[in-house]
Image 1 (cartoon, rainbow, N blue to C red):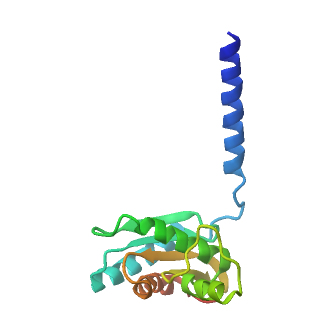
Image 2 (cartoon, rainbow, N blue to C red; image 1 turned 90 degrees about the vertical axis):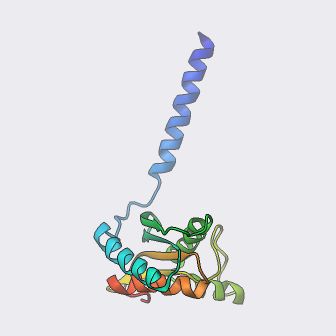
Image 3 (cartoon, helix red, strand yellow; image 1 turned 120 degrees about the vertical axis):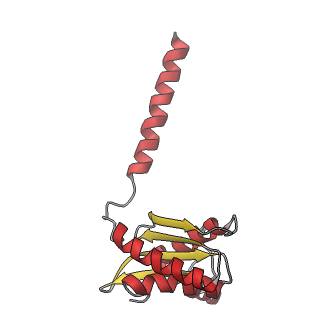
Length: 160
C-alpha cells in the first residue's frame, strides 16, 4: 500500500513539474499565421521543385515554434535536424543563419547551443518586425538559402 502511494506521489510530482516546464514558453502570440506560412511554403516549395532540389523546409514563428514543415521526397534523413538548427539561430538573432555564422567566426557574437553556422535559414520581417523564420536543408547552403528567400519574400522581407 505504501509503495503504491509513493509511486502515485512521484508520478503526480513528475507530471506537475513537466507541465510547468511546458507552460514556461513565451506568452507572445505567434505572428506567423498559418495563412502566411502556407503562402511562404508554397513559394519556397515551388522554387525548390523548379530547381529539382529535394529539401526539407521549416517555417517557425518568432518564438521558434514550428508552424509548417515539408520534407520533399528524396530529402535526406538529417535535413530536418539542420533546418531546425538554422531556424533556431534565425529566431534567436534576427540574422540569416549564414550571417550568424560569419559573426560567430569573427568573434562578434557568441555561438548558440544547438545552432549551425551555415546558410539556409532566413528571418521573415513584416513592417520591420520579426515574425518568424524559414529554414531549408538538403542542397548546398547557398541553394538552401535561395529556397528560404523565395518563401520569405512572398510574405515579407528577409531583412529589417
